[in-house]
Length: 71
Image (cartoon, rainbow, N blue to C red; front, top):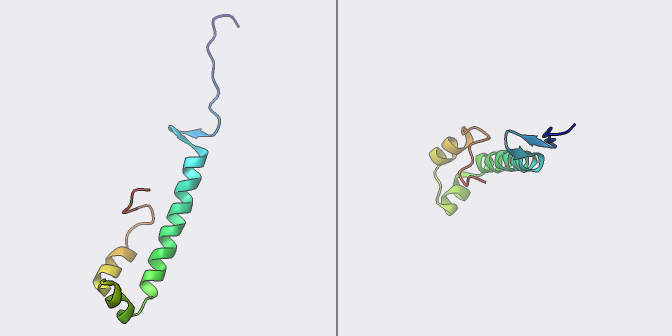
């Protein structure tokens, strides 16, 4: 129609592309794996890398979307 302006949003959700959301999901999964791995480490291994068990507990109970690197 004459004068009609139209556009199609393909793969967009609130300004973020579908690939952005997929990257976020992958990152959240990676954070979950890393936090689980960290929780399974021995006290000796934690001491070697300079992390206390209290630091680990704090990190493990963070929500999966709480990314300290903001990736």
